[in-house]
Length: 254
Ligand SMILES: Nc1ncnc2c1ncn2[C@@H]1O[C@H](COP(=O)(O)OP(=O)(O)OP(=O)(O)O)[C@@H](O)[C@H]1O
Image 1 (cartoon, protein in one colour):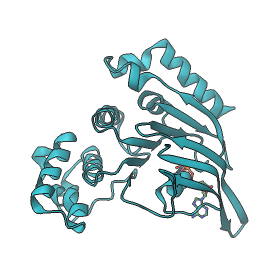
Image 2 (tube, rainbow, N blue to C red; image 1 turned 120 degrees about the vertical axis):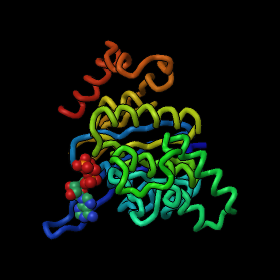
Image 3 (tube, rainbow, N blue to C red; image 1 turned 90 degrees about the vertical axis):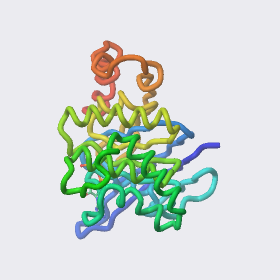
């Protein structure tokens, strides 16, 4: 069974200039373990679509099924990571990661082991006592990812999570995300402005058109599965990688 099934999703916004059609007739299926990226021109409705899948915004038309049942709102099964890590500034790293687990009333020992495991996963075991303002942007985003993973959602929804980071940190975090995806078998939906990032990380890339955002093309990409023994810089300069990047860009620019 498909984990997510979007059928004919459209989103209209009422603005003071009239109705703005942001997303138009988007259909897609997401299977367990997929790593899906959505790319497209700025302002084409990518975040709007992710908000619909997150359950934060009801579509104007269409239906979403999650494991066969209508998706009607946010749920613990879908964890969202935003561009700006939404951490609690008054809590330290451990407390930030533990926050959702405490709310759920998880026993203290289980909280401690989940926090430990997920901070190890993002290489922040030595920074548990620090507060967000003491961390770099990349470290803050790692904490946000650890916090989402601690909640153990089946699906990670990521809206340009590395967009505010420098190139080197971004590439490090791409590789960390890839490792986490391979180890945890989560399903990932990633919005990104970087076509290279999308092709490198995903199993499929969906290309959206300018407003109103429609799906122009779905392109399957082999690099995150079939090239796992290769170095990231090597992969990104392979002729087959460059050819796929140019193909995706040609849809965005056409
Ligand atoms: N709540 C809202 N009310 C009215 N218009 C909105 C609202 N949210 C988004 N829009 C409009 O919908 C369109 C799509 O916005 P969205 O943020 O989904 O695009 P995006 O592809 O994620 O953009 P970017 O790549 O620049 O982050 C834009 O024209 C935006 O102004």
